[in-house]
Length: 193
Image (tube, rainbow, N blue to C red; front, side):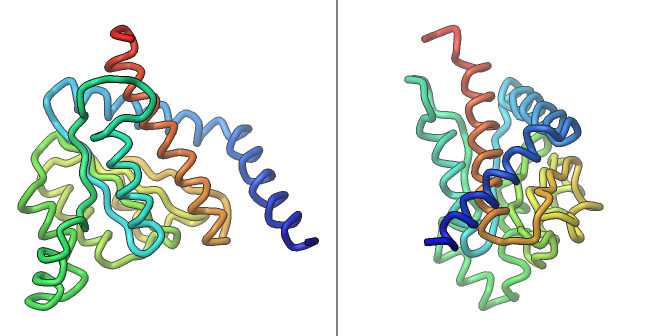
């Protein structure tokens, strides 16, 4: 039981740190506004991640394309890995580092938003996706751990969770993702409800 309390305290302290970090709160606001602007201009949001982060990417895409809190029209959003035939074909024909960059090249458009979740900030396939996104005029948002890794320098916005604990970083990524979804939904559809 003591380990359980330690884990909960770790998450609580990390959440409190985010709550008191003016820079990350400002970035969350800026990303929300950028997403809202993209949607008003007819663009979409794409998400990518690996392992648990891919599950979060898919979860957040569903919050936008399905619904979060409000009854409303769907918002175009998708996780880049949901077509398993595409992912396995690209991984087989090229290599796994190309799966997201090929997806972005095929489905992304200038003005879209790409959100990459990587606790290390060094996931090669996400790094490649961000490079492709920049070439195409797609706005990049990285959700990372403490250092930001390679994504820190490749992102238009890098939200660094000040931790090196993978589970705690992922928990905060989901919190940030939910805040973004709620902000977008409320701004676009709040007056209708």
